[in-house]
Length: 337
Image (cartoon, rainbow, N blue to C red; front, side):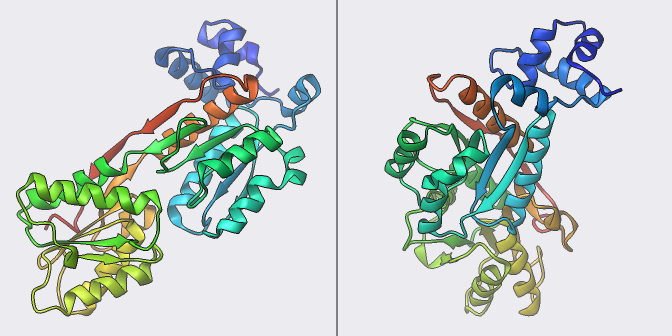
């Protein structure tokens, strides 16, 4: 027989109400109590009953996740964690992508024929403005939680990444290993996306704090955070008379491409050029050399985003919150011989 809320409550030594609060993502539960209940949920393999909840509440038991590109490893790993976090609470997740297209974002946000299919939306936009999000909020009323590194005005729940701090720590690590000619790959000067702006700010801050010059000639653009763009930019750097001794890449995919370019140019990593990225995708862990990176806590992002969305579904008038996900520096072979 499948485990019930009562089974979980009895094993954890708490009330059924407490278990329900944890499962529904209610924020006013202590972290110690949440961990205790979640441990029992995993032990008993408890899953909420979505059919019973739909009959009781009139909700679909489905959530939507919208990301720019599902085939980018960071977003596919995030999607997996969102699905896992939602499943614990008895929800299914429908996934769509915008393809980095503003019009597509508009269609997904304002497509009111879709709003009957799910109870709330997790949305990771690139170029959508607060005004467009306000249109979504006012027209459909579907609860919405924003994901990612975007600069919004507090009207919506937002699970964010501190890109400035993450980039600063990555570059500070390179400096600590003795590197002084540190290039960056990932700038997008023609765009207004928050991610490249914030990571550029972190890169520049680390150099300034170390007393190193900030030279725009060492900052190469990357229209897409792909292996190909990382390869192209790194090859350009390797062909210069004065080469960098380290490269900070704004994503792990860029870094993977950069490492290949360095080897194709007859140089070695990290002896000639150290490389570090951001994301901590699985590919980087098994690359040779393995990739140093800043790891973004996608399980935390998923868990908090689902929690905020379910809280928003329960109480649409609750004050919006901005939650910053933790990150950590992971040193591997690409910066440490």
